[in-house]
Length: 141
Image 1 (cartoon, rainbow, N blue to C red):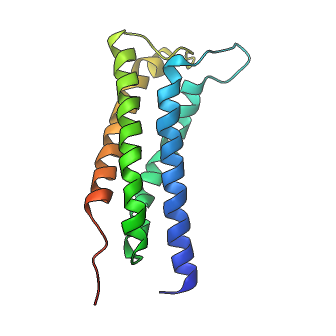
Image 2 (cartoon, one colour; image 1 turned 180 degrees about the horizontal axis):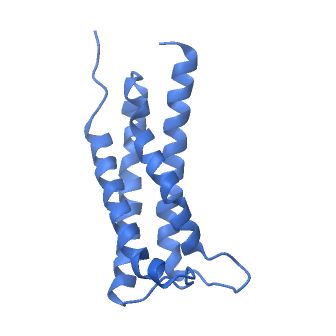
């Protein structure tokens, strides 16, 4: 494997992990976030970030072909899974309270589906994290 490919796979995988950690942290913060009239609401920013999160979920397995690296990086799935579970708890609490995010997205339709969309995204994130964690790099002789 060439150096450029190794560098690209490692870089893509690390960036994907960092973006997904940031997404999970932001989801945990949204229910407690205050909103000012002159700011873009964090809830709307998270909706705009969903395509990026989807791309990053697809890039997580990029390190599988790197011997040893995948075995090390796959342990990042444990804290990411825990953060995502905490984010799910925060989302379920806001769903149980029948509230929208503290700052409205500006559209009643988006406000109505904000929590379910992020719950589905969290479920996909958890499934991908478990898949990454459970598939160690095979050792080639």
